[in-house]
Length: 395
Image 1 (cartoon, rainbow, N blue to C red):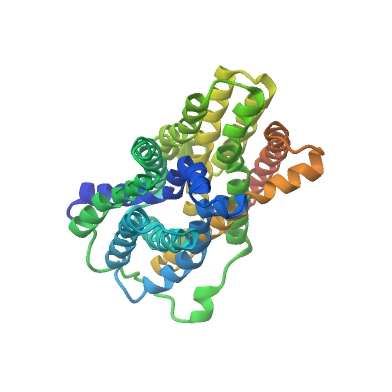
Image 2: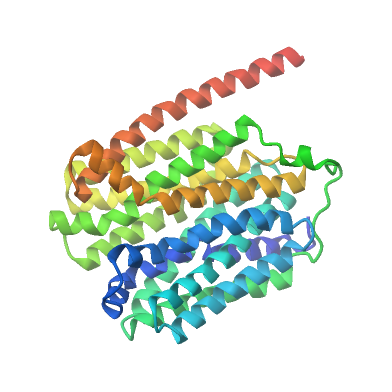
């Protein structure tokens, strides 16, 4: 532990504010489309998810860099890049290509920051406290996204490019990182001696990577379709659609504070509970088609986020600090790959449901998440029984 553990916690949580920074752009995509009429709709939409592709590449590389460069330096560099990307997007936005360049810079920054935040949690916190911090970290990411989405929307009323200034939220994290994150990395007592052993990933760990990717594929169906669903069903207006989007994030904030206690009581069944929250949330949205039920559904969908991802992260942590950094970075990278590929769910839903509406996509999501809830329950039960059996054999 560091001398100022509270300061370290504050640094980790504030640097995590930018984890979902790309969501802030969603409110100005229509403005960007108007500004650049020659750009296709797909080109405009991928401006929001392009940073996730960069995150996939950078986060794995960051794990290797952390063996040579301090995590403090890497996190600070990433936070600085995120802040600078906001300033440059605000100041220089003459073409869609240049906006992609700055979006890539944001992805580079987030790809450095989040793996370091996860790794610092692995380094300085153990067992239940680590689970609690992973939950808080996911909650902080949702809180940061809420702040940026709301403030960005307000700033965009001046002019759309002002929305990008919300990336300056990285600065408090940068200051606290320089103040409280130790200059030297934690060195594991039992350092792995061979590269081959370092890079070996078990089937158990691969499974958590798959769970993270599948979860993000299904989760992002909510944020990308809720506004379209409101329009189709003629529920409320743009303000009510914005409220629904905010509830998705609020759910993540609230559940982030509860994850540690839940993980202590039900273990990996938090994953089952996360998929169940998605299932019930999507079911409430498409079955009732009313404002209140849709709001409750959005809140439940948001609450699923801290139930699944922190568990996937924590499950690949071992006593080997270097290996834990690599594996948490891999899980984070695969999860972001799922986010980037999320628009593909629209195509699959169209093939299965023979319809191309937001409502049909929520029905599809409800069916899939219902199946995933059952599968995850059986998987965790079997896994727990095998673990108990192994413990008995050792005794």
